[in-house]
Each structure stands twice: as C-alpha cells, then as structure tokens.
Length: 389
Image 1 (cartoon, one colour):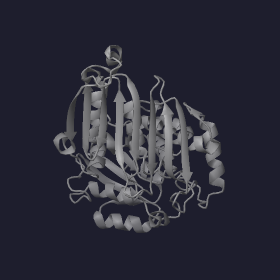
Image 2 (cartoon, one colour):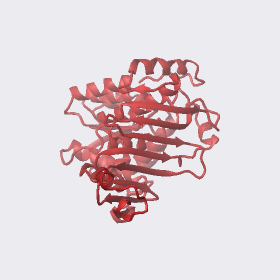
Image 3 (tube, one colour):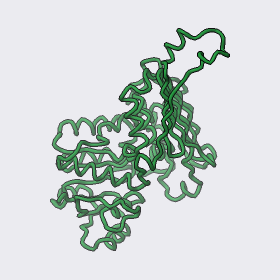
Image 4 (cartoon, helix red, strand yellow):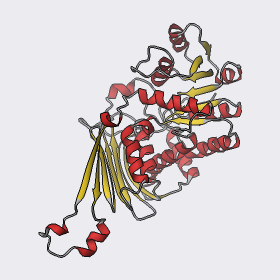
C-alpha cells in the first residue's frame, strides 16, 4: 500500500490528515488505497495534534529529513504558498511522488523550474489539488464545450464574490494577506480554483487588463477586490470579478458561443442550444424585430448538482487525492496534472502586474518583470520571514 506523508499541518493539512482516517472532517471523505505514515511541521504543537489522531505516525520538523527517511513514497504539500514549488522540486528530485495544494506557487518564474524538474522525472507523479476539477457541474460544462456544444467561443463572464473574509480572518496569522507571507490576496488564496476552471473551460487569453484594489475594505497589503478584462486569440473576450468583502456575494459563470450558452449558478447548469447558429440567423433575419422568426430559438437543458452527483466540499479534496494515488499506481490519469498549475498562476500574476504597471499585459507574461515587481512589495511588507526548507 502506498505510504503517504503530509507537510504543513495548518487548516488544510489537518483536513488531509483526517481524510486518511475512518473519521474524516467531511463525511464520506476518507481516502482509500493508501496509508498516512508521516507528518512534518515546524510547530511541535501541530505534530502533537497529529499524534493524537494516530499515535503511530512518524513526525518530522525537517522536510528533507522526511523525504530521505525511507518512510514515505509520496507527499502532500500543504505549506504556505512560497514553499510549494521549492518543496515540490525537492520531492521530485528524491523520487517522491508529490501532490501540491493550490496555488502551485506565487510567481511563474520558479514554477517553470518546478515543471522542468517534473518533465525530467516523468516516473514521478506530480499532481495539484485543484478540487473543482471533480465538480460535476464543471465536468459537464467541459463535456459540452469539448463536444462543440457552444460553437465558436465569444465571451465568458465570472462573478465570484462569495469569498467573504472578515478582518479577524486576516488577523489570525501575521503571514496572511501580505506580499512576503502569502504573495497576494483573493487571487492567490481564495480564487485560484475558479481561475483554473476559467482557463480549463475557455483556454488562455492573450491580453489582460485588470484593476486590483489593494486593502479595499480590509486592513491588508494585498488585493481584496479585482475586476479583470481579457481578450482571446480568436477574438473572444471575458470578465472576471472577485472580492472578499461583498455580502451577500455572487457566484455566476456564463460562457457563450455562436451555437449556445452555459450558465452555472446556484448549484445548477443551464445549457441553451441554439436551433439556428447566430451567424446563420444573422443572414436570414429581417429588419422587422417584431417578427418571431428573427428571435433566436433554443432548447434548454438544466442539470442540477444532485442529478449529476453532488460532491460536498471536502469530499472533492479526497477525490483528487484518490485520483493522484490511482495515477501513481497506474489505475488512472491525473485530473489535475501539476504542470498545468502554471496556467492559472500566469493569469493571477498578469492581473496583479497589470495593476502594478497600470497597463494591459500581453501573455505569455514577462516572468522576470513580475518577479522584480513582486520583490519590491515584499521588501516593504510587514511580514519579514524568508521561506526556505
């Protein structure tokens, strides 16, 4: 049976530890076909907590020591963001399979290095914990799009403002919402899942113009409110809006093409398939807008989460972990290959850089420019710890 270690026993680390027991934090979220053998954290209290869950767990305060101990075959990285690519590379080099929590890193410059190391060690399975890739609504949307169900892509709009976080959330840790500690705000911490879904469904844009408001309605250094406009190589466009201070918030995704439209909101997906593609309707429609023949006609199909197989929060994480385990043992392909994490990160970096420089950003991003601009903010950040392993 695969022997797994976990590094980083914060909130998500604890969720992952419990998922290897018969009493997971989330009902029905027990990971099968693997055994948790070891945990690693620099905080002795967190290691003591882990021992109360399983007295037989091996505990480490040094990540490299855990990797070289011979005790584990694979490791889940749930540490602060700056450490994700550093620890990912170290694990891969030691031939330890690795699953990294989102985001894959803070800046694309060192994530490119991580991907290079992964490509050079293809016998090591590198996955990413993008749990929304197991969400049945998004899987159905991708199925429709991949089957050319909406035709030529025209526009995507996503309003995801239900990431409400009060000031006490930010005050809970000195590293939170700082440039040097977390590397960003709502984009890097709360919304990476949606940004991954955005590119997974619609592809990567080639131009980004964003307006990030740093410390909007919260006493923090980083972005708490973002509106981004993007353009795609085929002429399509999109808008992404997110925040941590809207109450009540909204979560609505709308994707439209020449042949139809997908809307995901309130745990259901609406798919409207045009009976006549819009470009053809345009050729036959007359100037009389009162004529019913000029009105776009469509068939609508509505899918609900329950109908597609609802997956509660937390169970999604366990499903990604199980998929990673199955990929290691040759039973399945990765839902979220780790090398794909750079796509969402590039979008995040480009939105922040657009605001830093107050201009439109062309993709691929200038990774060195973003790194330099980020380091300027880290130099004045209230959080001073330098990450290392």
